[in-house]
Length: 460
Ligand code: SF4
Image 1 (cartoon, rainbow, N blue to C red):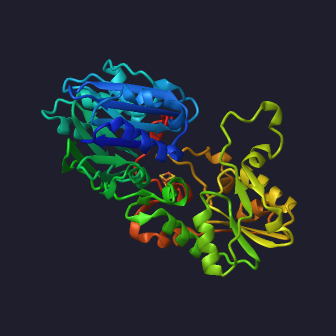
Image 2: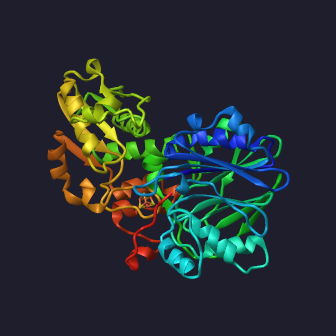
Image 3: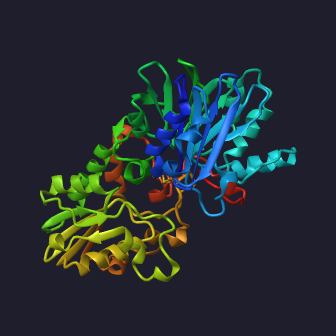
C-alpha cells in the first residue's frame, strides 16, 4: 500500500507532486502529504487526511515553493491511522532538512525500533518508516550517501523510498525489489520518481526506467547519478499481486504493461478453466483486463454485466443501512438486460475474504443469470502478506479455510476455477522472479520480527 512521488529540478515541484499523488490515489486514501524544499534548503511540510483533490487547494500549494518536493498517499492498517503516522516525515538533520517517503513493510522494524529506543531514540508514531530516519541520523559514515546506504542495508523486507537531504534527492528500492519505483524525465531536464508510471503520464514526464532492486539514485537539480548502493545477493521478489490487482492497468512496472499482464492472466485462465457460457464480464474495474483476456482466448463475447459506482465515499454508509449486501449494492449494480437467461462467466482478480463475492453472485442471480461460472485470475490467497499489502489474517482468508469445492458451494456458483500458480507466473515470466508468498507461503525476505515474537509493525 501507499504511493510515493519525488520531483527534482522542476519549477513548482509541489504542484507536480500533487498531480502525481492524484494519479496514485488508488494506492492509499487515508492521508496525503507533500513536502517542498526552498532554495535555501529549508523544507516545508503539509499533511492532511483524505484524498489529494480534497486535501490540497491551489492556495495550499502556493505555500510549498521550491524545485524539490516529496509526496505520499497512505493506506493505513488498523491502529496506524492518524496524521502522526502520515508522511512525508521531515526532520532537521546535521546535513540539512531531511524528508522521507516510504512504500512497503520493513520486516525487522520492531527489532530495530527496540534497539533504537534502548539507545534513547524518541519516536513520534508507530510506522516502520520512522526507523529509517533514526538509522540515517545515527550513522557515523562520512557522506550522506553512505549514511543512507548503511541505514537501508540494515533493513529486511520491502521498501521503496525517496529521501531529500538539503537540495539533493535520493530514491532507492530494497534488494528484493518488492515494491515498484520508476523514474521519469521532464522535457526541461527535471526528474520525477514515482511508484507507478501513470503518475509520470499525468504531468508530462517521460518514463525512463525502473529503479533497480538494491539501486540508489542521487539527483541534484538536473544531474542524476546511479549508485549501486545496497550490496546484497538477495533474489528478486517483485510482488506479483501488484500485477494481479494493485497497480493501475495504464501503468508499466518491471518492464511490463499491467494491462497486458492482466490480459495474459485472463488468457491463461481461459485455457486452464474453460466454461460453456454465453457471455464473459468482469468485476470492475481491477478485473477488466483479465476478463478481456478470458474473452479473447475463449471466443465468448465480452459484455458489461456489472456497473461500478465510482462516487461511493468511505463515510457514506449509515449504520442503519448496513444490511446484508448493502455495501456491495451501493458499489455495484447488475445489468438485467445483459444477464437475463444467460450462462455467464464472471472474472475477478482475486478472492480474499469472499464476502464481496457472495453479495455479487446474489446480485447476478437476482438479475436473471441462468448459470454463473466464477473465474479467478490468480490462485487461492492462503497466506497473509508481510511485505506491504494490507491483507486479513490467515483465519479470515477463505482460501486458507475452505477447499475450492467448499468455496464454490459457499458462493453458490455453478463452477469455480482459479488460475494455477505456475500459470500465473509463466504468463508474466519476463518481469520476474516474483514473490507469490500470499499464494504459496514461500516468504523469501526474512520475517525477523515475527521470528522474535514481535508484532508486525504498521505497514505503508
Ligand atoms: S505476499 Fe503477496 S501481496 Fe505480499 S509481496 Fe508477496 S505477492 Fe505481494
